Length: 143
Image (cartoon, one colour):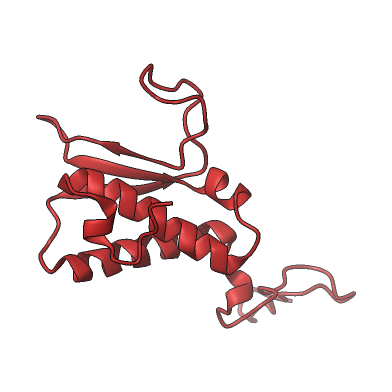
């Protein structure tokens, strides 16, 4: 073989081993992780609440963390928080953080997960706006 001939590059070796493509393609629900699905639930809940509110929310950051930090604030209860609201300061906008794993461990089905995410997001955004969760979301169950 001289330098003028094109080299054939195989993507798979002759025994069927070697690089393979994705297991599920084109993108299908099987390719989405639970964390990505949870993120979508949080964003959908916040979007729905903003539409119900009828006017734009003040500037804030919405985030999802897997678990809360292990050092709770002195004023917090002993139970694990499902979400937190951090007020704005001179350097940052207000922040709302939703904790994925504590919420997922409290539900038995995907329907319950959606309902609990809606409740937690409503509570945290109500704290942002300084209103009761029921004022923000008519579907909010205070019990």
